[in-house]
Length: 257
Image 1 (tube, rainbow, N blue to C red):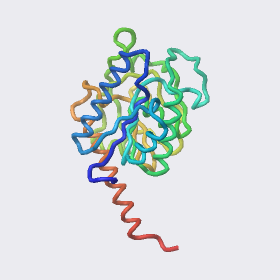
Image 2 (image 1 turned 90 degrees about the vertical axis):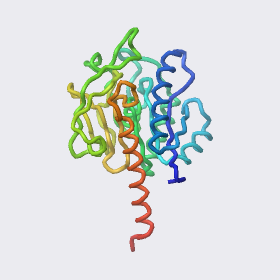
Image 3 (image 1 turned 45 degrees about the horizontal axis):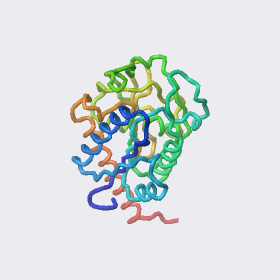
Image 4 (image 1 turned 180 degrees about the vertical axis):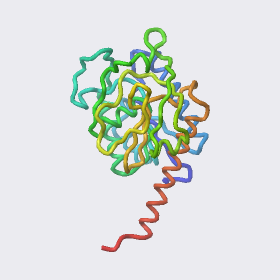
């Protein structure tokens, strides 16, 4: 760790939206992550990756011991080889997405712990070469529209036995809060499914070797199961500590060639 209190970089897309209600809703969710992260032992640092300078992003990333990639708009489809012509297409943050996917790939390469939420999961999948379902046939079971569009739909998810996420959460099933119409399709390199919804939608991914876990639902929603976000952020902290221990042991016992 860089300090006794580890730094957590919390990445958001932008604060410069025409839709101020959407920005406010996302801000509330991010603040919940910041507050809970601080309560379990992180020192959070929020950054709008689409608005900040390259220098500020690099400095924040270098300082960070772990990263959280938050939710937001649909991922720019040009990053996974598709067009912007699809049902319910919305605003795309091309610069923010390009920068986010770059940091995700760097985190995987450096084994820096990373946790993705909703769009964060989709960015993880795309960053590692995967694709997205651009509009779910069962979208109405995963999000609300119209005047309720910033509210959440509750549905259960089943956690895959033997996954890191199942070990962290400690239960086989969760009632989650969701708000999305897209989902992971073809999986990115070295990713595996860690949870699914009743309709088969991918609800969580994790990396086979790097310390990366991402969920499609919103554990930071105030309607989520009590303590769920705390459990996940404590799990991220445990992953960081385990990674540090492994690094220290490798340094103390270098391989003889």
